Every structure is written in structure tokens, then in C-alpha cells.
Image (tube, rainbow, N blue to C red):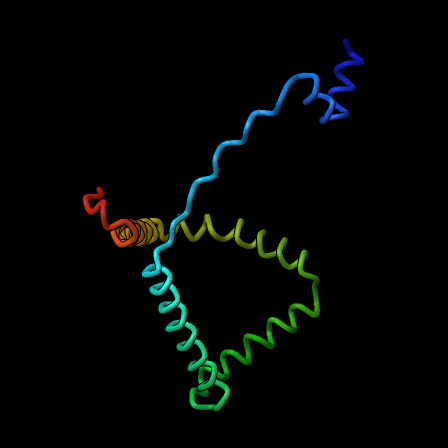
Amino acid sequence: MVISDVMLWRKKNMSVVLLGSRPSPPPLPEFHRTEAMTKEASKLLRIHLNKLFQVSHDIAMGRDSELFIKVAISLFLISFIGSLVDFQTLCHTGKGLVVMTVPTFYERYEVYIDISLLLIYNRAKELYLRFQIWAHPENEKLS
């Protein structure tokens, strides 16, 4: 009995022959994207990328000097801190800081944080319902 268990465990093909055929895998769900959905997504991506390129161009040309200085200082600080420690140590230190500070801030500002999170949740729920109606116009009565 033990030998047959070991043989069936070690050689999967032999176990299929001895025990019968494999069960068929569950069918994969079909994903449908309409051309309108794809065009809308590419349009939104194009708009956001153009805004990013415009801001980057303004920073590079010196038109927005305040933002240029903020970006330069941020990149310098990231480079300086990165030269002092490796990535794993930085992640562990950041995790420790978050674990120590977030509960303190939450206790102090609990009411404001709860109100803000409730507003964000309601807005996300509204956007999700809008997306569902937009993606599936045949089911306009969603709750």
C-alpha cells in the first residue's frame, strides 16, 4: 500500500493512467471589451500622459521654478538616502516608522480621518456604480 502511494505521488502520469483521466479544468470566464470602452480608456490615458509631459516640459524649461526646486530637492534626498542604506533596510525602517506613527495620528485625529474615509468610500462607490452602468448599459438598474 505504501509503495503504491509513493509511486502515485512521484509519477503523476502513472497515477493518471491507474486512477483514470484527469477532471477537466473549470472553464475560463470570457472577458469582453467593447471598442468604445477601449477608445475611452486610451483617450483618458492620452489626456493624463499629455498633462504629465506638459508639466515635465515646464519643469525642464524653468517655467515653474518652485516645482523645479521641489523636484530637485526630492531627487537629491532620495539619492542621498539611497546611497547611505540599501533598499531592504530602507523598507524595514519605513515600515517601523509607519507602525509606530499611524496609530498615534489616528488616535489624535480619529474623527477627521473617519469623516474623510467615509467621504472617499462614498465617492469610490459612486464611481464604481457609474462605471458599471457605463460598462453594462443593458443593466441600468444597479443598486
